Each structure stands twice: as C-alpha cells, then as structure tokens.
Image: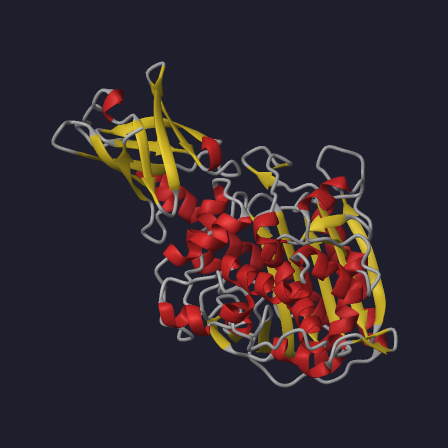
Length: 517
C-alpha cells in the first residue's frame, strides 16, 4: 500500500492472517434468540476496549436473516476530543474495500457489461504486465484473485512517494513477477485496482462513479464513497490513530485514491450493514434482485490457497476480493483491512447461518476487530468462548510488527567500529533516476543531505550519516524512529554513480543511476 498503509515487509506476514478462521464442520442456521443473547457480551467487550483505551473508537453492525439486529458506535472519533462514534460515523475501511469492490464488479457482470473472465487487454489495451503472455491473457478474475504474478508490494512504493494512479498503473509493467502467471498468490493492491479500473472501462465512467451508481446509491449507502475528498467532507468521520509512545494520537492522514478499489472506500456501519444484507441474501435486497446470484457467487469461490492461519491453524483461501474459509463454525466469507497510519476493519459472514458482523476501528495496530468477531461467534454458536481471542489477535499483531521495527532500529543503532567518515557531501549530491522510481535528487545544504522523490520532488527526507557511503532516512511518519538505509555506489571519479533506496527496493527496483542535470 501507499504512505500510511502496512508496508511490503509487513504484508508478507500480515496478508496470510487478516480475516482468517479455523478448520471445522459446516455451519447450521442459528436461532434469533442465540444471536440476540450474545449481543450484551459483545457490547460489554467493545465498551471495555474503549474504556481501557485499547482503541479510541469502534462501530459494530450485526446482521441476521436479512435484518440489522445490532448497530452501535463506541468511544471517540478522535482521541482528546468530545465527538463520539455513532452508527453513521464514516471510517476509512482500508482493504475491506476489496470485497466491496468485488460486489461492484459482480453488479457489472450481472448486467452483462463484462464477464469475470474478460481479458484486461480487451478492456484496457494500454495495460501491461512485465511479461508478454500474462499481459495478453490476464483477466479481471485473475487480478481480483491476486494470481497475476504481480508482487504484493508492486506499486505501493511509488504511490507512497506521491505518484498518481495513472503513473502507478503504467509502471507496473516494470515490476518482475513474484511467481509464474496464475501459479502463486500475492496480495496486490495495485493488481486488484487494475482489475477494477479495467472492469469500469466499458461503462465510460470512472471507477468511483461506477461504485456509486451500481452499489452505493441503489442500497441507500449515502455516506459511502471511493473518493478521499468525500471522506474529508464528512462532519461525522473517524480520525486515524497510531501510538508512537504517548498513547493514541491522530498523527497521520491517508489519502488512498490511487488504490481506491483496493483500499480507498470510506463508509459507516449503517451503510455497510446494507451491503452485508445484500451479500447474505445472494444479491437480493429489500425483496428485489439487485445482482445476479451467479455473478455474486463467483466472488465467494475458493480459488487460491493462503496457507495456515497462525492464530487458528486453519487452511484459508482467497476468492475474488474475499477470504473464504471453512472454520470452527463452518463456511465463512470475510476480509480485514488495515492502514498502519491508524485503521483496522473487519467483516465476517456465515452464509449458512445468514449471520454476519462488521467491526470498524480507528487505530493501528490492534486485533480488536478479529477478537470481537471471533468472540461473538463463539457465544452465538457455542454459548461460551473457546479461548481468549482478543489476547490471541493482539499478540499476533504485536509479534508481526513490533519485532520487525525493533530489528531495523537495532541494525542501525550504532555504526560499525571503527566507523568511516563520509566523503564530502558534494560527492553524493546530484540527480539519480530509473524508470520505475523516476528522479531522486540528493541536495546538500548546511552540511546535510536531503533526498527528494516523487512528482516535482515533493517527497523530501533529511538524511543522517551512518557509515562511509551509507545514510539513514526515516520514511514512515507513523513509525518515526524506524530507519531505512540509503546506500551510494562510488565510481572511479570519487563521486557516487548510483544510489539504492532501501524502502523502495522490495522488488529490486530501488537502485537509481546518476544522470546529468
């Protein structure tokens, strides 16, 4: 993802666990009495989370047998301010956008605009992948199932430094694949975005307009949008929160327009409950057929194995924008979302029980959405908790992200001994370039180097010297003490000929060569 999202090194672990469940038997219908009896315990757990400041705010919706049986907000929209979360508070839902977008495309498929197996080359002839054969054959289904071969971090890095959607989509052709076409699963925001944008092409409308006209407006989801400007314009909206040492603070903002289909939707619990009703009713809503059952059912087919869930040990799969699982309570469809700038979200539906839950949280990291959902379903199906799900999920998130940050800090805590001084800074200053990252300008001023990246060099980072030709940047505002290396290769003239930018090098595209100004 781009700036303020979970980064590539984090997604390698996190994509395998967000929204997963346990292996088990098929679910059976549950009575309304059991669904309602579990709600007071769910509410008490949610209230305890905000009272203990485990999260600033939450919004929860529960749907059963085509009715919204629970809808409530908890806590604060922004820590330190008085405004509280209610069912209409709009949250940035991050990767929960993916199943929402899959529903939008299902609506297009249902109306005959395209098929799930429509080739991207036919819908958008300008789109390319790294290799010719996948470029010619990749389909909307492939991109929504994350099986195109695109690495998971492709495009996230250059979005992070400010490039727009068109630029990111165009430069995907420069990223070598992480697997053979259709042979591997790699969770790709840019890939799913490319699939959604291509699906919208035959309509002549933007993706954002297609989402509005095909899903949001028909279901009365009037607070839902795939435009960041609409989110910012809402008076009743939740801020993003991170904890960088002093408790939850609204320190970072996140504009996800570049990857709107994959991570840029904002919505409320009230609105998303209507979408949950549509999903659980197989495309019907308020007694009317809104989406063909077959077009929607395709999104729930298990296509790609996602390996074992480290909390539950379940074998999990990915469909089209959905996680598909056979868990301890039976078949479920779900998806989680996260911005490392401060958002956590989750939807989980049990179609055989016609039951689902939505949890929106305005903080990162936290396992609160999964902990609340797993606890609620245990209370409904079993009458008691099988284990401490909140503790398990919080522990998982702590183990995924904390150690990696600490390892990076430890690696650069002290320079090698004896340390080597830098060359004169003029040896590093200059303009560097490659086709993927574009230009990087290293400028010397007042005895310091500054790195400028992205359009018009607007993404600026001061560098600190570490050892000889290696400097450090602190690229993540939500992790301000996490260093990343900037390494120079010195040529025979005594000046740097190339620079490698570590936080742009996940796909080995972070080395830029000096060019004449």
